[in-house]
Image (cartoon, rainbow, N blue to C red; front, side, top):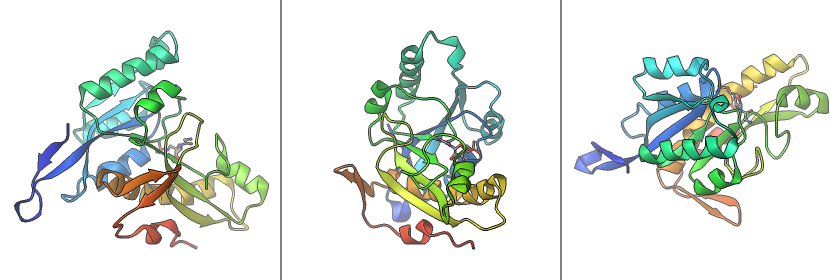
Amino acid sequence: MASGSGGVAGVEMQKKRTAILISGRGSNMSALLSAAEAPDFPAEISLVISNRPDAAGLQVAEAAGIRTLVLNHRDFADRIAFDASLDAHLRIESIDIVCLAGFMRLLTPWLVERWRNRMINVHPSLLPAFPGLDTHGRALEAGVRFHGCTVHFVRPVMDSGPIILQAAVPVLPQDDADGLAARVLRQEHAIYPAALRLLAGGQLSVENERVEITGARFPTEVMISPEA
Ligand code: GAR
């Protein structure tokens, strides 16, 4: 259930209760937390869950006053048991939207389907190119001229699903994987909050596994990187 907050001219805006799933440093989580501070942002971050007790992002979330939960995958017999617990916690907290933000664990098709079109992910490549790990090194190896990042709805196949927003970053002659990763990450921090705003604001629909955006204020501005 979404909670109310003060809206414009006395109109109540129902903010979507959003959970962020992390496994590590949580810089994308931080970008979402910052965006959600805006009074007109249509999502509130209600819960941060990590599958790793040592995820640095947990402390960041706690410092921001966000409820955190560790579901250590090592404590569960298998993926099905882990995902059943995850799903139960999300439902107990009346979560509307789930954002995967560096959550480095495969989810079962059962869980993904339960959250169909309500679970999104950020990935550091221009999908469908370079799903999986080491995307920046593989982009350099392939000699692509443009690299980037994608926010997409989650589907059972890893790093696949209808694309919501992308940002392109030119690959420069002097780039190494770390430099390229840093430039792509800045774009992740721009498009992930933008995508959550669109989803929570009811501006996205999925037709034939393609995303339609309605009434957007700025998608073209975030799809093309302003950085050289
Ligand atoms: C980000 O670059 C994100 O795109 C990537 O992990 C990093 C997490 O960083 N996710 C994936 O590769 C998912 N396939 P963060 O913890 O600082 O947000």
